[in-house]
Amino acid sequence: MKRIATLLVALLAITSLHAEEQPITFGELPKNAKIFVLTYFKDIKFKEVYIERRASLTQYEVKLEGGIDLQFDRMGLCTEITCKNGEIPDIVIPKRILTTIQKNFPDSYIRKYENNGRMYEIVLDDGTQLTFSRTLRLVDIED
Image (cartoon, rainbow, N blue to C red; front, side, top):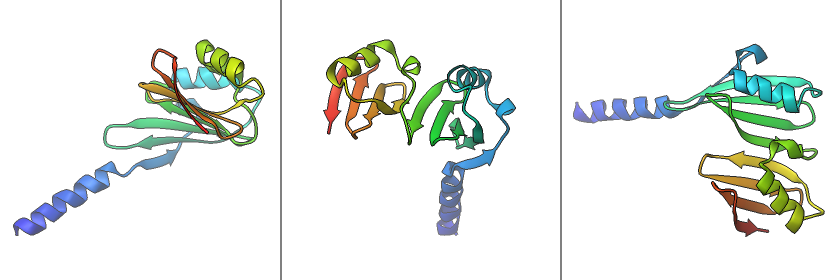
């Protein structure tokens, strides 16, 4: 009997960790996310908008035409931008990071930007991965 109870508890825990992704409308995004999209990507059409819920995490994903994916946290702050077919607009990248990239990689452009709260990860068009600290200092380069 203890074995069955343990198995049920484990199954419940695994099920609650599974992310549930649901389509939503643009209007259901947090205010900050809507402002971000309408400010920096206003000329690009929407394809899909999702909310993803896990036990302790809520995030939003906005898919735009042209292979652009945006992710936002529950407060609507942008945590990730991916441009599969082009470059991320310079204006959305922190200035110190952008300056470092322009100085050290002048012929490259940014395809992916991620901010997880502890560090920033950037992927350039040639696949080079750059890691910046919370204070925007370059700490790692992977070719």
